Amino acid sequence: MKKIIALLTIAGIMFFGLSNLMYAQTEGETTEQTAVEETATTTVAMQAETEAPQTFHEVLKEQFIDGGPEFMGIVLLTLIFGLAICIERIIYLTLSASNTKKLLEGIESALQTEGVEKAKEICRNTRGPVASIFYQGLLRFDSGIEEVEKSIVAYGSVITGRLESGVSWISLFIALAPMLGFMGTVVGMIQAFDAIAAAGDISPQIVADGIKVALLTTVFGLIVAIILQIFYNYIISKIDSLVNNMEDSSITFIDILNKYSKK
Image 1 (cartoon, helix red, strand yellow):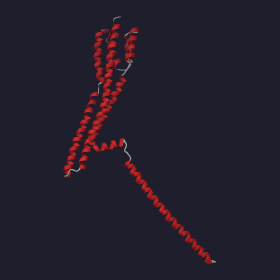
Image 2: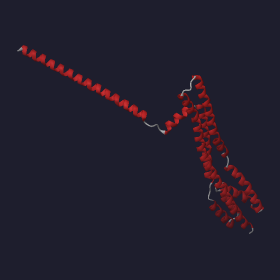
Image 3: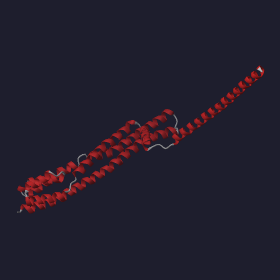
Image 4: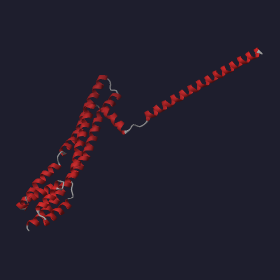
């Protein structure tokens, strides 16, 4: 009986031992397979990330670094300063626009009912360069129409100068950006030829890398010039529109004053 129990115990121990061994082998194979699959998945993911297209910001940053900080930084400063002046001019010109038709109607109504002082008050309470020109004309209403015309012409020139303030700086940055880019290209080409001379051999890789870095400054300089040129043309068109509006409304204003000065 004891021998049977001992044999059964030994058989049970061997069975559980073999079971654990087989489970361990199976688990090891499963773990190894899982590790291989995870490694493969990671490799595929890394390849996918490598092959994934870069965003415009990443490409721009990479090309900016490749072009070198010396000239690329200067070109970037021209863009920043140029855009700052453009934004300031656009805001100023937008605020300078006013409803001249409504203003002229208010001045005519005031001259007809309450007199010159009321017309001056309307001009003072109206924003924009046109109202300022009309106010200068009303100040000389008692001196005659000729004096009013002279004051309008003189003060109109002052207002036009204020509208065009800062525009010359924008044109300077438009001309400066590609020039700096070309200078960076020339310097980059010189460095490329120095690298060829140092290597003692005309390697296609050395030549291609040098030319690429040299041309990047020109590309960025032209991009900056194009952006600023668009803003510059828009600002010039706004100034022309305001000046034409001032001239047309000034003629109507003189006619109104001439009509009421005879009364």
